[in-house]
Image (cartoon, rainbow, N blue to C red; front, side, top):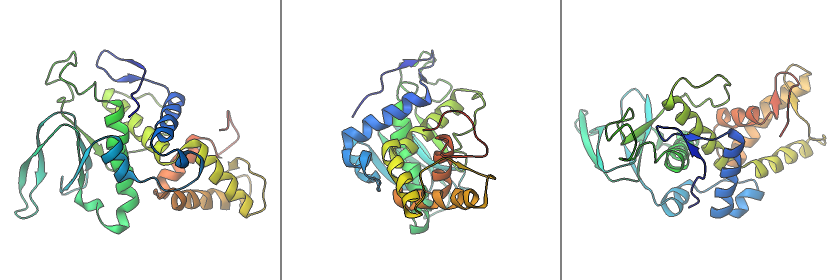
Length: 257
């Protein structure tokens, strides 16, 4: 497992740009599964978490309202779950390096969301944020994060937004989302998929500009669908990834990947 080499804040949250996170994601995939770096395809998330990161994955009902879909245990302890036999809250003992995924994601129709949540927790938080949750955190063993667990919130993974994060928790959530997307859809392989998409339509690869033409509007819908199927991620995750890389924009601007 390749460790992150970067500066950290006083609270041990990484100081790292999104460009540096892209490079880190590519290094990780190159180390774990080099073919996935060059050839568009589906990363084996189970093997990545279990054999590469040495994490243990458990499926438990975390809550009723699906507000929390995943939890990473950075230290030994107890985490609150719902006992599916009794329907009441219960304590579940975990060891450091345990990822808990809500059972609502275990159905076939939620497979793509489950894969992203697993990568957000293991490929994101575990790789990036162990220092922030360690007992050596300057804020002490209780800390502002409780220094044991961090939850992946449902439906809030929009790492595209440019406004400043208001606190360390938001910064870590966005970092974990970005790295998870970079590992599941590595930039070099995504470029290949991008070119293949246009090749199918006998078109020269180009940035898609929503509102520029009916063809671009059609491509702006079809490309995320194609990427989602190719990498087995949700269409929302594929769209955000493509927008972040400026492959799809609302108007011409700035650097294109």
